[in-house]
Image (cartoon, rainbow, N blue to C red; front, top):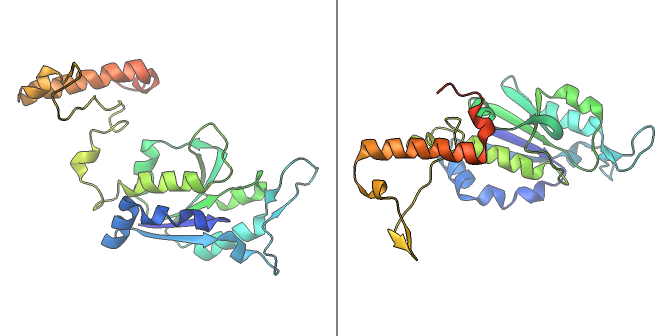
Amino acid sequence: MKITILSIAPEQFNDFLKTPLIHRAREKGVLDIEIKDIRDYAPGSFRKVDDSPYGGGPGMLLRVQPIADAIADSKSDDSHVLILAPIGKRFDQKDAHRLAEMKHLILVCGHYEGFDQRVYEFADETLSIGDYILCGGELPAMVISEAVTRLIEGTIKRDSIKEESFEDGLLEYPQYTRPAEYKGMKVPDVLLSGNDAKIKKWRRNKAIELTKERRANLLEDRKD
C-alpha cells in the first residue's frame, strides 16, 4: 500500500515515520508512505497557501489551488483521496478495514479555519476522528495511517488483531499477566484453569458485559 499525506506542516511527521509499526512496514516493503508539503504547490516566493474568507469572518482558509495541484500531482488511477476535517464521517474500525484494501490513499490535512469549500470537489470522501477541534489534520492523518497500516498483511500477526476491540462489534475482554495476585487483586481462576473452552466462554461473556457497561451503542447492530 502507498499512503501520501499532504500537509503544510510536514515536519510533524518526522518522528511518526520512525515509530516501530510504520518503520517496520516500510522496511518490509508493505508500506510506501510519503509526506508532501502543500506549500510547494503555491505560486510565488512566499508560497502563500491561505487567505481570508470572502464575506468576512475570523481566521484564514486554505486556498483551493495549491491543494488541488498537490492532489493532481499525487493522484493515479488507484488513488483514493481523503479530506480530514470535522465535517467528515467519524472514522471507525470498519473504515480502517475498508481503506486497508485500497492501493493508494491520499490524506489531505486541514489547517487554520479550514478549507475553501471547493477543495472537497477533489476528494472521494471526508473523514473525522472525533467531535473536537485540532489545529490541523496532521494528527488525524497519523491516526488513520496507523490504524490502516496495522491491518496490512505482513505488519501484525492476524491472531493479534481478530479479537481486539471493535473487530467483532465488542470491546475487548479484560486481560491479565503475572503475577497471579498483586496487593490482594487476583487473576480470575478460570484464566489459570487451562480449560480452553471455559476461558473462551468467559472472555466472550466479559466482552459483552464490558461493552454493555462502557459502550452500549456498539450492541445495537448486533444480532447475537
